[in-house]
Length: 52
Image (cartoon, rainbow, N blue to C red; front, side, top):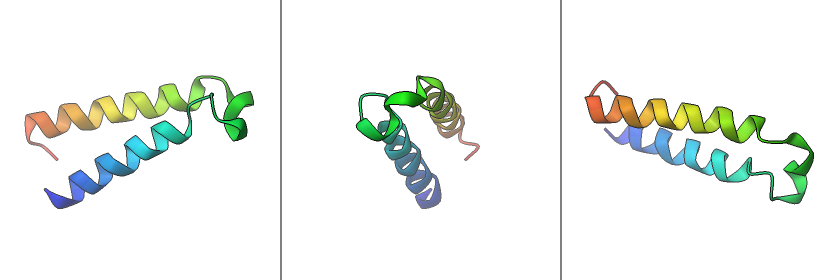
């Protein structure tokens, strides 16, 4: 359970870092945050199903 919690926290931090509002990622568009959002959604579903 600890590894999945750490993985979830890392993905959430990556999602916040990829938001296009920050100066370093303004030109990226919504691609990185959308991809990380899908990964986060999959991880949450796997956690709720008990498979991770």
